[in-house]
Image (cartoon, rainbow, N blue to C red; front, side):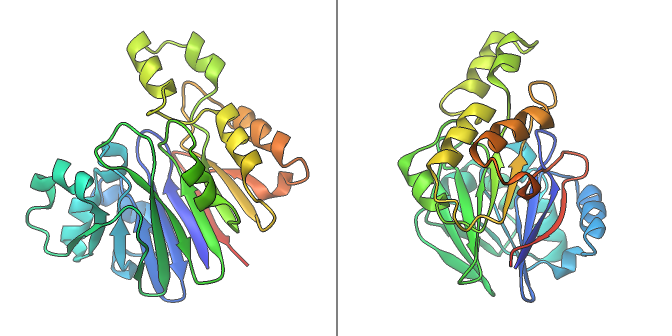
Length: 255
């Protein structure tokens, strides 16, 4: 089992999970040509994908999904609330499936467990991917942690965790007050401190790789995000990395 990120941030997000011959794309916030280019960095073509799963309807996550699915006849999985907010975009795509945010499903060899998160979208979810023995947990675009989120992410072998902003940089930065309130609120994005606090409450005994994701260009730095996580996993410096907007993250094997 392995995974990679095509890019992570407010300008576009996409993550691919591979188990055997099955490849699932989570979100696609890039144009069609940019998606093809970024897949090529991973030695993939769109035809190698088996499905797209969607977290929510914000453009940096769903903006390229319909075009990619239409062009390459890919099935799409998303919640009722997300689909309802995007009915026009998906009206002519036949293979669209509504998922229950609490019930697992599978695409080929990839087992997929959605779970709801607090975010300012219609019915947002995040996902845990598995091959039956190893688990990759993904959490971005949530304003706060919940006991259910903790239960979903405990015991993962790899974790992609939102470290969107440094609270002080956001507070003292150039964003207008309303945007600061949205980003830093309970339905916004996790800051470094809260991401680290969540991490500290998880069972990390199996954790092989921790990826800091969805970092803000203006309100965070890689050093601040990694530093906060390293305070929790003091002996895991070689297991912590950052997914960037421009380069994403190359393939990571989960042993």
